[in-house]
Length: 545
Image (cartoon, rainbow, N blue to C red; front, side, top):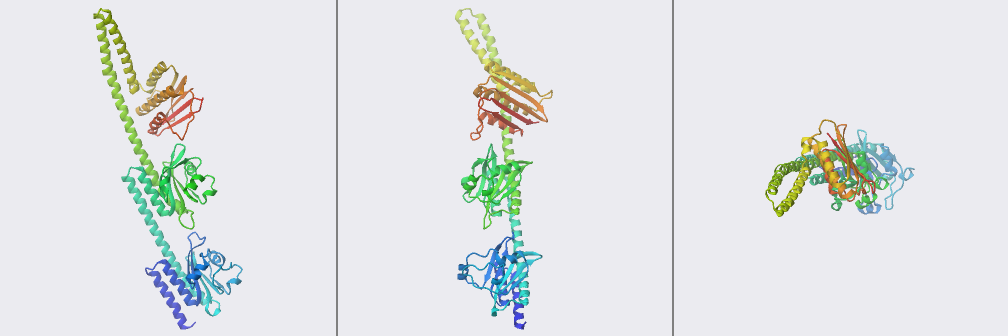
C-alpha cells in the first residue's frame, strides 16, 4: 500500500473519531463516515443503512455519489431485500465481483445507476447489529480488496459507536420524559380532586410519550362503556361517546383484567368495527385500570405515528404505569363522591330523626291536648250546634294526629333506633298492608345481635322504597321480604307478583332504583334487579358488615 493511501486512510479514521466525539448530529456523523469509506476505498457509490430496533428493516439510509435527480427517479428507499437483506440477516463482510451475477440479487429499480463490484460490512458492536456499510463501483473497474474490507470494518465500528451513543441518549431522554410525566401526574393527584382534568392529563402525556395518534380512557356505565377522556386529532367530538360493553374490545379487556395489543383491529373478532371506523383506527393497545384487584376502566391507544402503526412491549409497560395513575384518580374521585353522598345521607337521617321526634313529642302532644280540651267543651255545652261542631272538630284532630304519627314513622321510625331493623320493618309491613291491602310476608333471620346502625338504616330505606315502588308501578297482590345474615354480609330480597318490566339499559334506573344503588354503594355492596313483563320483580341486596 502506498504511503499517501495509508495516510488518507488514517486521516479518515481520525476525522470520523473526532466527528463522533463532537456535537454533530448522528445524521452528520454517519454522512461523514459514508463519505470517508467511499474516499479511502475508491468507491464511486457508498451507502449506510441503519436497522430499526425491531430488526425487520431499515430506519435510515444514507447515500453518497447519487445526485438528487437520480435519487428522485429511484423513488423510495430500499426495504432491506436482496443483497442488502442478506447482510441484515447474516452480519458478516461480503465482497462481490458483480452484483448481477449473485443469485440472491433482486436487481435495481428503474433509474438506478449500474453497479457491479460490491463491498458490504456490518455495523456492529458487542454482537449487536446496528446496520451495514455498502460500497460499489471501485475505481478502475477492479474488485474491492481485503485492505478495503479492513479499513471499512474500522469505519463501521466507529459508526456503531455513534449509533449506540445516539440510541442511549434517546433512551435516557425518553426515560427522563417518562419520569417527568409520571411525577406531574402524581403531583396532580395530590392537588386536584376533579376527575376530568386528571384523566385528561394522563391521556395527553401518554400519547406524547408513545407517539400514538389517539389515546382515551373508557369507564363502565351500566351495560355500556363511555369515553371519559381522550386526546388526539379530532378526539374532542368523541368525549362522552358510549358503546356496548359486551360488543367491544374494551369491555372484553375489562372482564379479563389484563393488557392486550392488537396489531390489526380489522382481524380481531372482539373489536367493535363501527367504533374503529369512526376513530379511523387500525391497531390498538388496551390496558385495564385496576383498583384493589377490581377492574374499573380501560386505557386505550390507537395507531402509533409512523410507517409501523403497531405498539411495542415497551409501549404496553409504559401504558400500564399510566393506567395505575388513572385508576388512582378514578378511585379517589369515587371515594370523594361517595364520602360526600354519605355525609348527605347521614345529614338527612339526623334531620329526619329530629323532625320525627318533634312531630311525635311536640305536635302530637299538642293535638292530644286539643282533643282533651274538646271533650271538656262537649261536656260543658248542651246545645245541639255546639255538640256537632265539637264532634266535627274532634274528627279532624284525630285524623290529623294519625297523619302526624304516620309521617313521623316514615321520616324515622322510633322502633328502628330503639329495637332494631326487624321490629321497625314489622311495623312498616303492618301499616303498609292495612293501607294498601297488599299482602306482605316478612322473614327475618338476622340473629340476636343487631346490625350496625348505618346498615340498618340502609336496608330499612331500601325496603321502604321498594314497597313504595310496588304500590306505584307493580299492581301486585303479594310481596315477600327476606332478611338474612350470611358470610359476613347482610342480605335482603324483596319479591312481588306484579306485572314486572323490561329493564332498559339505554334509559337507566328510575329515581327510586338509583337511590337504592347509591345507598348500597356507600357500603361497597351489591344490588341486582331481575324482572320481566308479567313475571314480577325481584330486588336483591348484599351489604358487607
